[in-house]
Length: 304
Image (cartoon, rainbow, N blue to C red):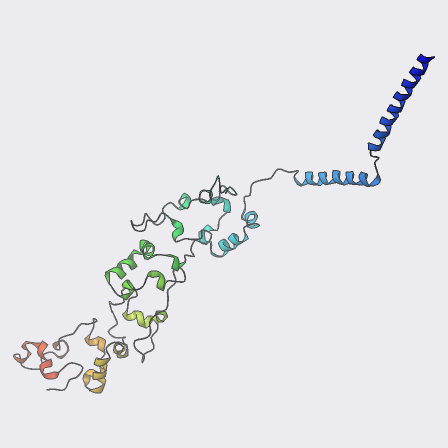
Protein backbone atom coordinates (compact mmCIF):
# COMPACT_ATOMS: atom_id res chain seq x y z
CA UNK A 1 0.00 0.00 0.00
CA UNK A 2 2.82 2.35 0.84
CA UNK A 3 4.35 1.73 -2.57
CA UNK A 4 1.09 2.58 -4.33
CA UNK A 5 0.71 5.79 -2.32
CA UNK A 6 4.25 6.88 -3.18
CA UNK A 7 3.64 6.25 -6.90
CA UNK A 8 0.40 8.22 -6.80
CA UNK A 9 2.11 11.12 -5.07
CA UNK A 10 4.94 11.16 -7.66
CA UNK A 11 2.44 11.07 -10.50
CA UNK A 12 0.52 13.95 -8.97
CA UNK A 13 3.66 16.09 -8.60
CA UNK A 14 4.64 15.38 -12.21
CA UNK A 15 1.15 16.23 -13.43
CA UNK A 16 1.10 19.47 -11.49
CA UNK A 17 4.51 20.45 -12.92
CA UNK A 18 3.29 19.71 -16.43
CA UNK A 19 0.20 21.81 -15.91
CA UNK A 20 2.32 24.72 -14.64
CA UNK A 21 4.56 24.56 -17.71
CA UNK A 22 1.53 24.51 -20.01
CA UNK A 23 0.08 27.53 -18.16
CA UNK A 24 3.32 29.52 -18.53
CA UNK A 25 3.51 28.64 -22.24
CA UNK A 26 -0.03 29.77 -22.77
CA UNK A 27 0.69 33.09 -21.09
CA UNK A 28 3.65 33.69 -23.40
CA UNK A 29 1.84 32.72 -26.57
CA UNK A 30 0.44 35.68 -28.59
CA UNK A 31 -2.95 35.21 -29.97
CA UNK A 32 -3.19 36.91 -33.41
CA UNK A 33 -5.52 39.90 -33.48
CA UNK A 34 -7.14 41.82 -36.34
CA UNK A 35 -4.65 44.76 -35.96
CA UNK A 36 -1.53 42.59 -36.18
CA UNK A 37 -2.87 40.89 -39.29
CA UNK A 38 -3.40 44.27 -41.03
CA UNK A 39 0.14 45.39 -40.09
CA UNK A 40 1.65 42.25 -41.58
CA UNK A 41 -0.24 42.78 -44.84
CA UNK A 42 0.93 46.44 -45.04
CA UNK A 43 4.55 45.42 -44.55
CA UNK A 44 4.30 42.86 -47.31
CA UNK A 45 2.75 45.45 -49.67
CA UNK A 46 5.50 47.97 -48.81
CA UNK A 47 8.17 45.43 -49.69
CA UNK A 48 6.45 44.85 -53.02
CA UNK A 49 6.43 48.63 -53.81
CA UNK A 50 10.12 49.03 -52.90
CA UNK A 51 10.98 46.00 -55.00
CA UNK A 52 9.11 47.44 -58.00
CA UNK A 53 10.97 50.80 -57.71
CA UNK A 54 14.25 49.02 -58.22
CA UNK A 55 13.00 46.37 -60.63
CA UNK A 56 15.02 47.63 -63.63
CA UNK A 57 18.60 47.91 -64.91
CA UNK A 58 19.71 51.60 -64.99
CA UNK A 59 21.55 53.04 -68.01
CA UNK A 60 24.36 55.64 -67.75
CA UNK A 61 23.46 59.29 -68.37
CA UNK A 62 24.09 60.27 -71.96
CA UNK A 63 22.06 63.36 -72.93
CA UNK A 64 22.12 67.06 -72.09
CA UNK A 65 18.49 66.85 -71.01
CA UNK A 66 19.32 64.21 -68.40
CA UNK A 67 22.33 66.10 -66.98
CA UNK A 68 20.39 69.38 -66.91
CA UNK A 69 17.80 67.99 -64.52
CA UNK A 70 20.36 68.32 -61.70
CA UNK A 71 22.89 70.80 -63.14
CA UNK A 72 20.44 73.57 -64.04
CA UNK A 73 22.91 76.43 -63.48
CA UNK A 74 25.54 74.81 -65.71
CA UNK A 75 22.91 74.17 -68.37
CA UNK A 76 21.85 77.85 -68.36
CA UNK A 77 25.45 79.11 -68.70
CA UNK A 78 26.19 76.81 -71.61
CA UNK A 79 22.88 77.73 -73.25
CA UNK A 80 23.59 81.47 -72.94
CA UNK A 81 27.38 81.64 -73.46
CA UNK A 82 28.69 78.18 -74.20
CA UNK A 83 29.93 78.92 -77.71
CA UNK A 84 31.45 75.82 -79.24
CA UNK A 85 31.07 74.06 -75.89
CA UNK A 86 27.36 73.59 -76.68
CA UNK A 87 27.86 69.86 -77.13
CA UNK A 88 26.79 66.73 -75.27
CA UNK A 89 28.04 66.86 -71.67
CA UNK A 90 29.50 63.35 -71.93
CA UNK A 91 31.70 64.44 -74.85
CA UNK A 92 33.87 66.16 -72.22
CA UNK A 93 32.83 64.37 -69.04
CA UNK A 94 33.69 60.80 -69.99
CA UNK A 95 33.56 60.05 -66.27
CA UNK A 96 31.26 61.84 -63.86
CA UNK A 97 30.12 61.69 -60.23
CA UNK A 98 33.55 60.35 -59.34
CA UNK A 99 34.74 63.17 -57.08
CA UNK A 100 35.94 61.90 -53.71
CA UNK A 101 37.87 64.27 -51.43
CA UNK A 102 40.02 61.39 -50.13
CA UNK A 103 40.46 59.17 -53.17
CA UNK A 104 39.70 61.30 -56.23
CA UNK A 105 40.36 65.05 -55.77
CA UNK A 106 38.40 67.56 -57.83
CA UNK A 107 41.25 68.58 -60.14
CA UNK A 108 41.63 64.98 -61.32
CA UNK A 109 37.90 64.43 -61.74
CA UNK A 110 37.30 67.20 -64.29
CA UNK A 111 38.36 66.79 -67.95
CA UNK A 112 41.55 68.47 -69.21
CA UNK A 113 41.20 71.26 -71.78
CA UNK A 114 44.16 69.98 -73.80
CA UNK A 115 42.33 66.71 -74.42
CA UNK A 116 40.36 68.53 -77.12
CA UNK A 117 42.17 71.83 -77.61
CA UNK A 118 45.80 70.86 -77.10
CA UNK A 119 47.83 74.06 -76.46
CA UNK A 120 45.40 76.25 -78.38
CA UNK A 121 47.22 79.60 -78.09
CA UNK A 122 50.76 78.22 -78.21
CA UNK A 123 53.17 77.84 -75.33
CA UNK A 124 53.11 81.52 -74.36
CA UNK A 125 56.13 83.21 -72.79
CA UNK A 126 58.47 82.42 -69.94
CA UNK A 127 56.69 85.06 -67.83
CA UNK A 128 53.23 83.80 -68.79
CA UNK A 129 53.19 80.23 -70.08
CA UNK A 130 49.83 79.46 -71.64
CA UNK A 131 49.37 76.05 -70.07
CA UNK A 132 46.66 77.00 -67.58
CA UNK A 133 43.57 77.70 -69.67
CA UNK A 134 41.54 78.57 -66.57
CA UNK A 135 43.70 81.64 -65.86
CA UNK A 136 41.71 83.38 -68.61
CA UNK A 137 38.79 81.05 -69.36
CA UNK A 138 37.60 80.92 -65.76
CA UNK A 139 34.33 79.12 -66.57
CA UNK A 140 34.56 76.27 -69.11
CA UNK A 141 30.77 76.34 -69.43
CA UNK A 142 30.96 79.97 -70.63
CA UNK A 143 34.47 79.95 -72.15
CA UNK A 144 34.32 83.26 -74.01
CA UNK A 145 33.28 85.27 -70.96
CA UNK A 146 36.72 86.27 -69.73
CA UNK A 147 36.63 88.65 -66.75
CA UNK A 148 38.98 91.53 -67.55
CA UNK A 149 39.84 92.34 -63.95
CA UNK A 150 41.17 88.82 -63.43
CA UNK A 151 43.92 89.16 -66.03
CA UNK A 152 47.46 90.45 -65.63
CA UNK A 153 49.24 92.47 -68.31
CA UNK A 154 51.47 89.49 -69.08
CA UNK A 155 48.45 87.27 -69.64
CA UNK A 156 46.96 89.81 -72.08
CA UNK A 157 50.24 90.33 -73.87
CA UNK A 158 50.69 86.62 -74.47
CA UNK A 159 47.88 86.74 -77.02
CA UNK A 160 47.69 90.41 -77.97
CA UNK A 161 51.25 90.73 -79.23
CA UNK A 162 50.54 93.63 -81.62
CA UNK A 163 49.01 95.80 -78.90
CA UNK A 164 51.76 94.74 -76.50
CA UNK A 165 54.47 95.96 -78.87
CA UNK A 166 52.65 99.24 -79.52
CA UNK A 167 52.23 100.11 -75.87
CA UNK A 168 55.75 99.09 -74.78
CA UNK A 169 57.57 100.66 -77.74
CA UNK A 170 55.68 103.96 -77.41
CA UNK A 171 55.93 104.81 -73.73
CA UNK A 172 53.14 106.96 -72.36
CA UNK A 173 51.02 107.11 -69.22
CA UNK A 174 49.08 104.22 -70.73
CA UNK A 175 52.30 102.24 -70.34
CA UNK A 176 53.47 103.36 -66.93
CA UNK A 177 50.33 104.21 -64.95
CA UNK A 178 47.56 101.81 -66.00
CA UNK A 179 47.16 98.11 -66.70
CA UNK A 180 45.15 96.44 -69.45
CA UNK A 181 42.40 95.56 -66.99
CA UNK A 182 42.03 99.19 -65.89
CA UNK A 183 40.59 99.98 -69.31
CA UNK A 184 39.20 96.59 -70.39
CA UNK A 185 37.68 96.03 -66.98
CA UNK A 186 34.21 94.64 -67.66
CA UNK A 187 35.14 91.53 -69.60
CA UNK A 188 37.45 90.37 -72.35
CA UNK A 189 36.79 92.33 -75.52
CA UNK A 190 35.25 95.30 -73.74
CA UNK A 191 36.35 98.60 -75.35
CA UNK A 192 35.88 101.59 -73.04
CA UNK A 193 34.89 105.11 -74.02
CA UNK A 194 37.80 107.55 -73.80
CA UNK A 195 35.77 109.83 -71.53
CA UNK A 196 35.60 107.11 -68.88
CA UNK A 197 39.05 108.36 -67.86
CA UNK A 198 39.76 111.49 -69.92
CA UNK A 199 38.11 114.86 -70.16
CA UNK A 200 38.12 116.65 -73.51
CA UNK A 201 41.17 118.90 -73.90
CA UNK A 202 39.22 120.97 -76.47
CA UNK A 203 36.08 122.27 -74.71
CA UNK A 204 35.05 124.27 -77.76
CA UNK A 205 34.79 121.14 -79.89
CA UNK A 206 32.54 118.14 -79.33
CA UNK A 207 34.91 115.22 -78.72
CA UNK A 208 33.77 111.64 -79.10
CA UNK A 209 35.89 108.47 -79.32
CA UNK A 210 36.43 108.88 -83.05
CA UNK A 211 37.68 112.43 -82.55
CA UNK A 212 40.04 111.33 -79.76
CA UNK A 213 41.46 108.42 -81.69
CA UNK A 214 41.82 110.40 -84.89
CA UNK A 215 44.86 111.91 -83.14
CA UNK A 216 45.70 109.46 -80.36
CA UNK A 217 46.08 105.78 -81.37
CA UNK A 218 44.83 104.09 -78.22
CA UNK A 219 47.85 101.87 -77.48
CA UNK A 220 50.37 104.59 -78.38
CA UNK A 221 48.53 107.79 -77.45
CA UNK A 222 51.61 110.01 -77.42
CA UNK A 223 52.29 109.21 -81.08
CA UNK A 224 49.88 111.83 -82.36
CA UNK A 225 48.59 111.54 -85.90
CA UNK A 226 45.83 113.41 -87.69
CA UNK A 227 44.28 114.20 -91.04
CA UNK A 228 45.65 117.27 -92.81
CA UNK A 229 42.22 118.16 -94.22
CA UNK A 230 39.75 117.07 -91.54
CA UNK A 231 41.35 118.24 -88.27
CA UNK A 232 39.78 121.48 -86.97
CA UNK A 233 42.06 124.07 -85.40
CA UNK A 234 39.98 123.91 -82.20
CA UNK A 235 41.26 120.39 -81.56
CA UNK A 236 44.86 121.60 -81.78
CA UNK A 237 43.97 124.54 -79.56
CA UNK A 238 43.16 122.17 -76.72
CA UNK A 239 46.90 121.70 -76.16
CA UNK A 240 48.39 124.55 -78.18
CA UNK A 241 46.24 127.33 -76.81
CA UNK A 242 48.97 129.98 -76.87
CA UNK A 243 49.64 129.53 -80.61
CA UNK A 244 45.89 129.46 -81.31
CA UNK A 245 45.30 132.67 -79.34
CA UNK A 246 48.10 134.46 -81.21
CA UNK A 247 46.57 133.50 -84.55
CA UNK A 248 43.11 134.70 -83.50
CA UNK A 249 44.28 137.93 -81.90
CA UNK A 250 46.63 138.95 -84.72
CA UNK A 251 44.63 138.40 -87.84
CA UNK A 252 46.73 137.56 -90.92
CA UNK A 253 46.42 135.15 -93.80
CA UNK A 254 47.79 132.48 -91.47
CA UNK A 255 44.71 132.80 -89.25
CA UNK A 256 42.51 131.03 -91.80
CA UNK A 257 45.02 128.28 -92.57
CA UNK A 258 44.51 124.94 -90.82
CA UNK A 259 47.20 124.02 -88.33
CA UNK A 260 47.47 120.59 -89.96
CA UNK A 261 48.30 122.11 -93.35
CA UNK A 262 51.58 123.51 -92.02
CA UNK A 263 52.20 120.90 -89.32
CA UNK A 264 51.38 117.84 -91.42
CA UNK A 265 53.16 115.71 -88.84
CA UNK A 266 52.84 116.50 -85.16
CA UNK A 267 55.71 118.68 -83.84
CA UNK A 268 57.08 119.22 -87.34
CA UNK A 269 57.98 122.86 -87.98
CA UNK A 270 58.13 123.51 -91.74
CA UNK A 271 60.40 125.95 -93.53
CA UNK A 272 58.64 129.11 -94.67
CA UNK A 273 59.85 128.48 -98.22
CA UNK A 274 57.72 125.31 -98.42
CA UNK A 275 54.67 127.51 -98.84
CA UNK A 276 56.06 130.94 -99.73
CA UNK A 277 58.84 130.00 -102.15
CA UNK A 278 61.56 132.70 -102.52
CA UNK A 279 59.86 136.10 -102.08
CA UNK A 280 63.19 137.92 -101.47
CA UNK A 281 66.63 138.00 -103.08
CA UNK A 282 68.74 134.86 -103.18
CA UNK A 283 71.14 136.41 -100.70
CA UNK A 284 68.35 137.11 -98.23
CA UNK A 285 66.80 133.68 -98.79
CA UNK A 286 70.08 131.84 -98.32
CA UNK A 287 68.88 130.63 -94.93
CA UNK A 288 65.08 130.47 -94.71
CA UNK A 289 65.29 129.34 -91.09
CA UNK A 290 65.96 133.01 -90.29
CA UNK A 291 62.67 134.36 -91.71
CA UNK A 292 61.53 134.85 -88.16
CA UNK A 293 64.27 137.42 -87.56
CA UNK A 294 62.06 139.87 -89.45
CA UNK A 295 58.62 138.29 -89.42
CA UNK A 296 58.50 137.03 -85.86
CA UNK A 297 56.83 133.65 -85.60
CA UNK A 298 54.28 132.17 -87.97
CA UNK A 299 51.51 132.68 -85.41
CA UNK A 300 52.31 136.39 -85.04
CA UNK A 301 53.48 137.87 -88.34
CA UNK A 302 53.99 141.67 -88.10
CA UNK A 303 57.28 142.74 -89.74
CA UNK A 304 59.83 144.05 -87.28
